[in-house]
Image 1: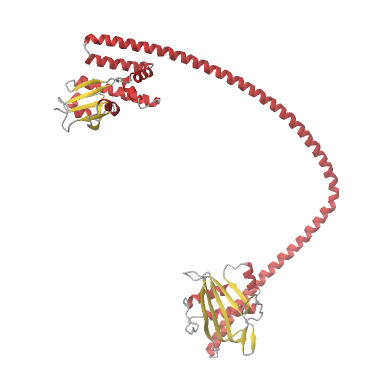
Image 2: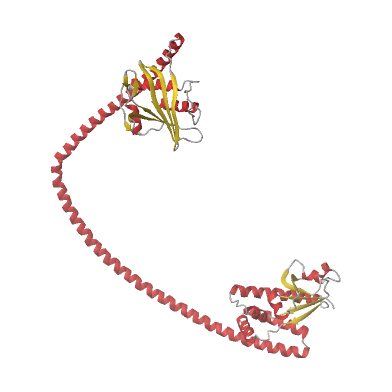
Length: 466
Protein backbone atom coordinates (compact mmCIF):
# COMPACT_ATOMS: atom_id res chain seq x y z
CA UNK A 1 0.00 0.00 0.00
CA UNK A 2 1.57 3.30 -1.15
CA UNK A 3 1.93 6.28 1.08
CA UNK A 4 -0.54 9.09 0.55
CA UNK A 5 -0.39 12.74 1.52
CA UNK A 6 -3.68 14.65 1.91
CA UNK A 7 -3.64 18.46 1.90
CA UNK A 8 -6.57 20.71 2.99
CA UNK A 9 -7.01 24.50 3.56
CA UNK A 10 -7.19 24.08 7.33
CA UNK A 11 -7.78 21.62 10.13
CA UNK A 12 -11.53 22.29 10.34
CA UNK A 13 -12.14 21.34 6.69
CA UNK A 14 -9.89 18.29 7.04
CA UNK A 15 -11.69 17.07 10.15
CA UNK A 16 -15.06 17.05 8.28
CA UNK A 17 -13.92 14.46 5.74
CA UNK A 18 -10.98 12.50 7.21
CA UNK A 19 -11.26 11.01 10.66
CA UNK A 20 -8.78 8.15 10.42
CA UNK A 21 -6.63 9.39 13.32
CA UNK A 22 -3.61 10.05 11.12
CA UNK A 23 -0.79 12.19 12.41
CA UNK A 24 -1.23 15.94 11.80
CA UNK A 25 1.67 18.05 10.50
CA UNK A 26 1.95 21.69 9.51
CA UNK A 27 2.87 22.28 5.84
CA UNK A 28 2.31 24.64 2.92
CA UNK A 29 1.63 24.91 -0.83
CA UNK A 30 3.51 27.22 -3.17
CA UNK A 31 1.52 29.97 -4.85
CA UNK A 32 4.12 30.04 -7.61
CA UNK A 33 6.35 27.00 -8.18
CA UNK A 34 9.60 27.32 -10.15
CA UNK A 35 10.06 23.84 -11.68
CA UNK A 36 13.70 24.49 -12.64
CA UNK A 37 14.70 24.87 -9.02
CA UNK A 38 13.02 21.62 -7.94
CA UNK A 39 14.58 19.31 -10.61
CA UNK A 40 13.04 16.80 -13.05
CA UNK A 41 11.48 14.60 -10.34
CA UNK A 42 10.54 16.91 -7.49
CA UNK A 43 9.80 15.40 -4.13
CA UNK A 44 6.29 16.03 -2.84
CA UNK A 45 7.81 17.26 0.45
CA UNK A 46 9.75 19.92 -1.47
CA UNK A 47 6.40 21.31 -2.60
CA UNK A 48 4.55 20.89 0.65
CA UNK A 49 7.24 22.22 3.01
CA UNK A 50 8.76 25.00 0.86
CA UNK A 51 9.29 28.26 2.73
CA UNK A 52 8.71 31.05 0.14
CA UNK A 53 5.25 32.26 -0.93
CA UNK A 54 3.71 29.85 1.56
CA UNK A 55 0.06 29.16 2.36
CA UNK A 56 -0.35 27.39 5.70
CA UNK A 57 -2.34 24.11 5.65
CA UNK A 58 -2.53 20.87 7.69
CA UNK A 59 -1.08 17.58 6.40
CA UNK A 60 -2.19 13.99 7.19
CA UNK A 61 0.43 11.35 6.43
CA UNK A 62 0.02 7.55 6.73
CA UNK A 63 3.71 6.58 6.83
CA UNK A 64 7.14 8.11 7.36
CA UNK A 65 8.35 7.25 3.84
CA UNK A 66 8.20 9.71 0.99
CA UNK A 67 4.73 10.06 -0.51
CA UNK A 68 4.13 9.52 -4.21
CA UNK A 69 0.41 10.27 -4.13
CA UNK A 70 -1.21 13.49 -2.92
CA UNK A 71 -4.92 14.29 -2.59
CA UNK A 72 -5.98 17.94 -2.54
CA UNK A 73 -9.29 18.98 -0.95
CA UNK A 74 -10.84 21.73 -3.10
CA UNK A 75 -13.81 23.34 -1.27
CA UNK A 76 -15.64 26.15 -3.00
CA UNK A 77 -15.52 29.53 -1.27
CA UNK A 78 -19.16 29.30 -0.17
CA UNK A 79 -18.61 25.79 1.22
CA UNK A 80 -15.42 26.91 2.98
CA UNK A 81 -17.21 29.87 4.61
CA UNK A 82 -20.26 27.72 5.42
CA UNK A 83 -18.14 25.22 7.33
CA UNK A 84 -16.66 28.02 9.43
CA UNK A 85 -20.02 29.73 9.98
CA UNK A 86 -20.98 26.65 11.92
CA UNK A 87 -18.54 27.99 14.58
CA UNK A 88 -20.51 31.27 14.75
CA UNK A 89 -17.96 33.43 12.96
CA UNK A 90 -19.84 36.67 12.28
CA UNK A 91 -17.11 39.29 12.62
CA UNK A 92 -16.36 41.16 9.39
CA UNK A 93 -12.64 41.02 10.00
CA UNK A 94 -12.78 37.21 10.51
CA UNK A 95 -14.86 36.80 7.30
CA UNK A 96 -12.27 38.81 5.31
CA UNK A 97 -9.50 36.63 6.75
CA UNK A 98 -11.29 33.43 5.68
CA UNK A 99 -11.76 34.74 2.13
CA UNK A 100 -8.07 35.67 1.94
CA UNK A 101 -6.97 32.23 3.20
CA UNK A 102 -9.20 30.38 0.72
CA UNK A 103 -8.05 32.57 -2.22
CA UNK A 104 -4.36 31.90 -1.50
CA UNK A 105 -4.95 28.16 -1.06
CA UNK A 106 -6.99 27.81 -4.26
CA UNK A 107 -4.40 29.78 -6.31
CA UNK A 108 -1.65 27.47 -5.02
CA UNK A 109 -3.69 24.36 -5.88
CA UNK A 110 -4.22 25.63 -9.43
CA UNK A 111 -0.51 26.22 -9.92
CA UNK A 112 0.60 22.87 -8.48
CA UNK A 113 -2.03 20.81 -10.36
CA UNK A 114 -1.12 22.38 -13.68
CA UNK A 115 2.61 21.75 -13.17
CA UNK A 116 2.49 18.27 -11.58
CA UNK A 117 -0.73 16.51 -12.66
CA UNK A 118 0.84 13.07 -12.35
CA UNK A 119 1.39 13.49 -8.60
CA UNK A 120 -1.93 15.01 -7.51
CA UNK A 121 -5.64 14.24 -7.62
CA UNK A 122 -8.36 16.73 -6.56
CA UNK A 123 -11.34 15.94 -4.31
CA UNK A 124 -14.32 18.30 -4.46
CA UNK A 125 -16.11 19.00 -1.15
CA UNK A 126 -19.87 19.03 -0.69
CA UNK A 127 -21.62 20.21 2.45
CA UNK A 128 -24.31 17.53 2.40
CA UNK A 129 -26.48 18.21 5.46
CA UNK A 130 -25.86 21.93 5.65
CA UNK A 131 -27.69 23.23 2.60
CA UNK A 132 -29.38 26.08 4.46
CA UNK A 133 -26.10 27.10 6.10
CA UNK A 134 -24.34 26.93 2.75
CA UNK A 135 -26.94 29.18 1.10
CA UNK A 136 -26.69 31.74 3.92
CA UNK A 137 -22.96 31.93 3.32
CA UNK A 138 -23.56 32.19 -0.42
CA UNK A 139 -25.95 35.15 0.03
CA UNK A 140 -23.49 36.80 2.38
CA UNK A 141 -20.80 36.65 -0.31
CA UNK A 142 -22.80 37.05 -3.54
CA UNK A 143 -23.12 40.89 -3.47
CA UNK A 144 -19.35 41.32 -4.03
CA UNK A 145 -18.28 41.16 -7.70
CA UNK A 146 -14.72 40.11 -6.83
CA UNK A 147 -16.03 37.18 -4.77
CA UNK A 148 -18.40 36.26 -7.63
CA UNK A 149 -15.38 36.16 -9.89
CA UNK A 150 -13.59 33.81 -7.50
CA UNK A 151 -16.65 31.53 -7.31
CA UNK A 152 -16.92 31.36 -11.11
CA UNK A 153 -13.20 30.75 -11.44
CA UNK A 154 -13.35 27.84 -8.98
CA UNK A 155 -16.39 26.33 -10.74
CA UNK A 156 -14.73 26.61 -14.15
CA UNK A 157 -11.50 25.07 -12.83
CA UNK A 158 -13.21 22.07 -11.20
CA UNK A 159 -15.64 21.43 -14.08
CA UNK A 160 -12.96 21.72 -16.74
CA UNK A 161 -10.68 19.22 -15.02
CA UNK A 162 -13.03 16.68 -13.45
CA UNK A 163 -16.47 16.69 -15.22
CA UNK A 164 -17.29 15.27 -18.71
CA UNK A 165 -17.50 17.82 -21.48
CA UNK A 166 -21.22 17.18 -22.09
CA UNK A 167 -22.12 18.04 -18.54
CA UNK A 168 -19.72 20.93 -18.20
CA UNK A 169 -21.68 23.43 -20.28
CA UNK A 170 -24.96 22.61 -18.56
CA UNK A 171 -23.42 22.88 -15.09
CA UNK A 172 -21.68 26.16 -15.88
CA UNK A 173 -24.81 27.67 -17.48
CA UNK A 174 -27.00 26.78 -14.51
CA UNK A 175 -24.41 28.01 -12.04
CA UNK A 176 -23.86 31.27 -13.94
CA UNK A 177 -27.64 31.92 -14.20
CA UNK A 178 -28.07 31.20 -10.49
CA UNK A 179 -25.20 33.49 -9.60
CA UNK A 180 -26.51 36.27 -11.87
CA UNK A 181 -30.03 36.10 -10.43
CA UNK A 182 -28.79 36.16 -6.85
CA UNK A 183 -26.36 38.94 -7.60
CA UNK A 184 -29.05 41.11 -9.25
CA UNK A 185 -31.47 40.53 -6.37
CA UNK A 186 -28.83 41.49 -3.83
CA UNK A 187 -27.83 44.53 -5.88
CA UNK A 188 -31.41 45.83 -5.99
CA UNK A 189 -31.89 45.15 -2.28
CA UNK A 190 -28.66 46.93 -1.47
CA UNK A 191 -29.65 49.92 -3.65
CA UNK A 192 -33.03 50.20 -1.88
CA UNK A 193 -31.31 49.89 1.48
CA UNK A 194 -28.85 52.64 0.54
CA UNK A 195 -31.70 54.98 -0.49
CA UNK A 196 -33.56 54.33 2.77
CA UNK A 197 -30.37 54.97 4.75
CA UNK A 198 -29.76 58.25 2.89
CA UNK A 199 -33.32 59.46 3.56
CA UNK A 200 -32.99 58.48 7.21
CA UNK A 201 -29.77 60.47 7.49
CA UNK A 202 -31.40 63.54 5.92
CA UNK A 203 -34.38 63.32 8.28
CA UNK A 204 -32.03 63.06 11.27
CA UNK A 205 -30.14 66.15 10.10
CA UNK A 206 -33.40 68.14 9.76
CA UNK A 207 -34.44 67.07 13.26
CA UNK A 208 -31.04 68.03 14.65
CA UNK A 209 -31.30 71.49 13.02
CA UNK A 210 -34.80 72.06 14.44
CA UNK A 211 -33.71 70.96 17.91
CA UNK A 212 -30.66 73.20 17.73
CA UNK A 213 -32.78 76.23 16.77
CA UNK A 214 -35.21 75.58 19.64
CA UNK A 215 -32.34 75.23 22.12
CA UNK A 216 -30.78 78.48 20.88
CA UNK A 217 -34.09 80.36 21.31
CA UNK A 218 -34.40 79.04 24.86
CA UNK A 219 -30.80 80.05 25.57
CA UNK A 220 -31.39 83.63 24.33
CA UNK A 221 -34.51 83.93 26.48
CA UNK A 222 -32.64 82.68 29.57
CA UNK A 223 -29.82 85.14 28.88
CA UNK A 224 -32.25 88.08 28.69
CA UNK A 225 -33.95 87.04 31.94
CA UNK A 226 -30.58 86.67 33.68
CA UNK A 227 -29.44 90.11 32.40
CA UNK A 228 -32.57 91.79 33.77
CA UNK A 229 -32.15 90.15 37.16
CA UNK A 230 -28.47 91.06 37.25
CA UNK A 231 -29.24 94.71 36.43
CA UNK A 232 -31.71 94.92 39.33
CA UNK A 233 -29.20 93.29 41.68
CA UNK A 234 -26.43 95.74 40.67
CA UNK A 235 -28.74 98.70 41.23
CA UNK A 236 -29.50 97.44 44.72
CA UNK A 237 -25.79 97.03 45.47
CA UNK A 238 -25.07 100.61 44.31
CA UNK A 239 -27.71 101.94 46.70
CA UNK A 240 -26.26 99.94 49.59
CA UNK A 241 -22.72 101.18 48.82
CA UNK A 242 -23.86 104.80 48.85
CA UNK A 243 -25.41 104.32 52.28
CA UNK A 244 -22.24 102.64 53.59
CA UNK A 245 -20.07 105.50 52.28
CA UNK A 246 -22.20 108.02 54.14
CA UNK A 247 -21.83 106.05 57.39
CA UNK A 248 -18.07 105.75 56.90
CA UNK A 249 -17.70 109.48 56.33
CA UNK A 250 -19.51 110.16 59.59
CA UNK A 251 -17.39 107.58 61.48
CA UNK A 252 -14.04 109.04 60.36
CA UNK A 253 -14.26 112.05 62.68
CA UNK A 254 -15.19 109.85 65.63
CA UNK A 255 -12.18 107.63 65.07
CA UNK A 256 -9.53 110.36 64.80
CA UNK A 257 -8.99 110.35 68.58
CA UNK A 258 -8.86 106.55 68.60
CA UNK A 259 -6.14 106.64 65.89
CA UNK A 260 -4.07 109.07 67.98
CA UNK A 261 -4.29 106.70 70.97
CA UNK A 262 -3.16 103.79 68.80
CA UNK A 263 -0.15 105.80 67.56
CA UNK A 264 0.83 106.60 71.13
CA UNK A 265 0.52 102.92 72.12
CA UNK A 266 2.67 101.98 69.14
CA UNK A 267 5.41 104.41 70.20
CA UNK A 268 5.35 103.04 73.77
CA UNK A 269 5.63 99.43 72.58
CA UNK A 270 8.50 100.38 70.26
CA UNK A 271 10.44 101.85 73.22
CA UNK A 272 9.81 98.70 75.30
CA UNK A 273 11.00 96.51 72.42
CA UNK A 274 14.21 98.51 72.07
CA UNK A 275 14.81 98.21 75.82
CA UNK A 276 14.18 94.45 75.70
CA UNK A 277 16.62 94.01 72.79
CA UNK A 278 19.26 95.90 74.79
CA UNK A 279 18.69 93.60 77.79
CA UNK A 280 19.04 90.54 75.55
CA UNK A 281 22.30 91.86 74.18
CA UNK A 282 23.62 92.49 77.71
CA UNK A 283 22.56 88.99 78.81
CA UNK A 284 24.35 87.39 75.82
CA UNK A 285 27.46 89.40 76.68
CA UNK A 286 27.17 88.21 80.29
CA UNK A 287 26.96 84.57 79.17
CA UNK A 288 30.07 84.98 77.03
CA UNK A 289 31.86 86.59 79.97
CA UNK A 290 30.80 83.73 82.29
CA UNK A 291 32.09 81.17 79.80
CA UNK A 292 35.44 83.00 79.66
CA UNK A 293 35.67 83.11 83.46
CA UNK A 294 34.87 79.37 83.69
CA UNK A 295 37.62 78.62 81.22
CA UNK A 296 40.08 80.72 83.21
CA UNK A 297 39.04 79.05 86.50
CA UNK A 298 39.57 75.63 84.92
CA UNK A 299 43.06 76.60 83.78
CA UNK A 300 43.94 77.99 87.21
CA UNK A 301 42.65 74.82 88.92
CA UNK A 302 44.79 72.64 86.63
CA UNK A 303 47.86 74.76 87.37
CA UNK A 304 47.12 74.61 91.10
CA UNK A 305 46.76 70.81 91.02
CA UNK A 306 50.08 70.48 89.18
CA UNK A 307 51.89 72.73 91.65
CA UNK A 308 50.43 70.91 94.62
CA UNK A 309 51.38 67.60 93.10
CA UNK A 310 54.93 68.78 92.41
CA UNK A 311 55.25 69.99 96.01
CA UNK A 312 54.01 66.64 97.31
CA UNK A 313 51.13 68.25 99.22
CA UNK A 314 48.20 67.00 97.06
CA UNK A 315 45.34 65.80 99.22
CA UNK A 316 44.92 62.08 99.47
CA UNK A 317 41.55 61.22 97.97
CA UNK A 318 40.02 57.98 96.77
CA UNK A 319 37.30 57.21 94.20
CA UNK A 320 34.99 54.40 95.39
CA UNK A 321 32.17 52.60 93.55
CA UNK A 322 29.16 52.21 95.89
CA UNK A 323 26.52 50.70 93.54
CA UNK A 324 26.02 49.75 89.90
CA UNK A 325 22.63 48.88 88.34
CA UNK A 326 21.05 48.35 84.90
CA UNK A 327 17.32 48.55 84.02
CA UNK A 328 15.22 49.57 80.96
CA UNK A 329 18.03 50.96 78.80
CA UNK A 330 19.43 52.86 81.82
CA UNK A 331 22.66 52.36 83.73
CA UNK A 332 23.43 54.00 87.10
CA UNK A 333 26.65 54.48 89.08
CA UNK A 334 26.72 55.60 92.72
CA UNK A 335 30.23 57.04 93.43
CA UNK A 336 32.03 58.49 96.48
CA UNK A 337 35.20 60.62 96.64
CA UNK A 338 36.91 60.40 100.02
CA UNK A 339 38.77 63.48 101.32
CA UNK A 340 37.64 65.59 98.34
CA UNK A 341 38.87 69.20 98.35
CA UNK A 342 38.12 71.69 95.58
CA UNK A 343 37.53 75.50 95.38
CA UNK A 344 38.24 75.90 99.12
CA UNK A 345 35.56 73.34 99.92
CA UNK A 346 36.43 70.15 101.77
CA UNK A 347 34.28 67.03 102.02
CA UNK A 348 34.92 63.91 104.07
CA UNK A 349 32.77 61.92 101.66
CA UNK A 350 31.44 63.50 98.46
CA UNK A 351 28.62 61.17 97.28
CA UNK A 352 26.80 61.55 93.96
CA UNK A 353 25.06 59.47 91.28
CA UNK A 354 25.47 59.44 87.48
CA UNK A 355 22.74 57.98 85.22
CA UNK A 356 23.19 57.05 81.55
CA UNK A 357 19.86 57.10 79.63
CA UNK A 358 18.95 55.66 76.20
CA UNK A 359 21.88 53.24 76.31
CA UNK A 360 22.68 51.63 72.95
CA UNK A 361 24.41 48.26 72.36
CA UNK A 362 27.23 50.11 70.61
CA UNK A 363 28.55 53.59 71.41
CA UNK A 364 27.04 53.77 74.93
CA UNK A 365 25.03 57.06 75.02
CA UNK A 366 25.18 60.90 74.90
CA UNK A 367 22.54 61.64 77.56
CA UNK A 368 23.87 61.84 81.14
CA UNK A 369 22.21 62.88 84.40
CA UNK A 370 24.03 64.09 87.56
CA UNK A 371 22.18 63.83 90.91
CA UNK A 372 23.46 65.60 94.08
CA UNK A 373 22.11 65.49 97.68
CA UNK A 374 23.04 67.09 101.02
CA UNK A 375 26.23 65.38 102.30
CA UNK A 376 27.06 64.05 105.79
CA UNK A 377 30.38 65.38 107.14
CA UNK A 378 32.12 65.47 110.53
CA UNK A 379 30.87 69.01 111.03
CA UNK A 380 27.29 68.07 110.15
CA UNK A 381 25.18 68.15 106.95
CA UNK A 382 26.73 70.11 104.11
CA UNK A 383 25.36 71.19 100.71
CA UNK A 384 27.44 70.03 97.76
CA UNK A 385 27.16 73.43 96.03
CA UNK A 386 27.46 76.98 97.30
CA UNK A 387 24.10 78.08 95.81
CA UNK A 388 22.15 74.96 96.78
CA UNK A 389 18.72 74.88 95.03
CA UNK A 390 17.34 71.31 94.76
CA UNK A 391 14.69 70.87 92.10
CA UNK A 392 13.24 67.38 92.82
CA UNK A 393 12.30 65.14 95.74
CA UNK A 394 12.02 61.35 96.14
CA UNK A 395 11.83 58.88 99.05
CA UNK A 396 15.42 59.72 100.11
CA UNK A 397 14.77 63.46 100.22
CA UNK A 398 15.41 66.53 98.11
CA UNK A 399 18.02 66.49 95.38
CA UNK A 400 19.43 68.55 92.51
CA UNK A 401 18.98 66.75 89.17
CA UNK A 402 20.99 68.12 86.21
CA UNK A 403 20.29 66.60 82.74
CA UNK A 404 23.41 67.25 80.66
CA UNK A 405 23.43 66.42 76.92
CA UNK A 406 23.95 68.39 73.68
CA UNK A 407 20.21 68.71 72.89
CA UNK A 408 18.70 70.08 76.10
CA UNK A 409 15.07 71.17 76.25
CA UNK A 410 14.32 74.70 77.58
CA UNK A 411 13.37 73.24 81.00
CA UNK A 412 16.60 71.18 81.17
CA UNK A 413 18.73 74.18 80.14
CA UNK A 414 17.08 76.39 82.80
CA UNK A 415 18.38 74.20 85.65
CA UNK A 416 21.93 74.55 84.25
CA UNK A 417 21.66 78.32 83.67
CA UNK A 418 20.58 78.92 87.30
CA UNK A 419 23.99 77.70 88.59
CA UNK A 420 26.32 80.52 89.53
CA UNK A 421 29.82 80.83 88.13
CA UNK A 422 31.51 79.30 91.21
CA UNK A 423 29.24 76.21 91.23
CA UNK A 424 29.81 75.66 87.50
CA UNK A 425 33.55 75.85 88.09
CA UNK A 426 33.23 73.31 90.94
CA UNK A 427 31.31 70.86 88.67
CA UNK A 428 33.91 71.31 85.91
CA UNK A 429 36.61 70.41 88.41
CA UNK A 430 34.59 67.37 89.54
CA UNK A 431 34.32 66.05 85.94
CA UNK A 432 38.03 66.79 85.35
CA UNK A 433 38.81 64.66 88.40
CA UNK A 434 36.59 61.80 87.11
CA UNK A 435 38.12 61.86 83.61
CA UNK A 436 41.74 61.85 84.75
CA UNK A 437 43.59 59.09 82.80
CA UNK A 438 44.37 55.87 84.73
CA UNK A 439 41.95 56.84 87.51
CA UNK A 440 39.53 54.02 88.24
CA UNK A 441 37.09 53.56 91.15
CA UNK A 442 37.67 50.97 93.82
CA UNK A 443 34.91 48.50 92.98
CA UNK A 444 34.86 46.36 96.16
CA UNK A 445 33.76 43.33 94.09
CA UNK A 446 30.87 45.32 92.55
CA UNK A 447 30.71 44.37 88.82
CA UNK A 448 30.64 47.09 86.17
CA UNK A 449 28.47 46.44 83.08
CA UNK A 450 30.96 48.19 80.78
CA UNK A 451 34.56 49.50 80.93
CA UNK A 452 35.00 52.62 83.07
CA UNK A 453 36.67 54.36 80.09
CA UNK A 454 33.24 54.60 78.41
CA UNK A 455 31.88 56.32 81.53
CA UNK A 456 34.78 58.78 81.36
CA UNK A 457 33.79 59.63 77.75
CA UNK A 458 30.25 60.37 78.97
CA UNK A 459 31.64 62.54 81.84
CA UNK A 460 33.58 64.62 79.29
CA UNK A 461 30.42 65.19 77.18
CA UNK A 462 28.44 66.22 80.27
CA UNK A 463 31.17 68.70 81.32
CA UNK A 464 31.07 70.32 77.86
CA UNK A 465 27.36 71.23 78.33
CA UNK A 466 28.03 73.33 81.48
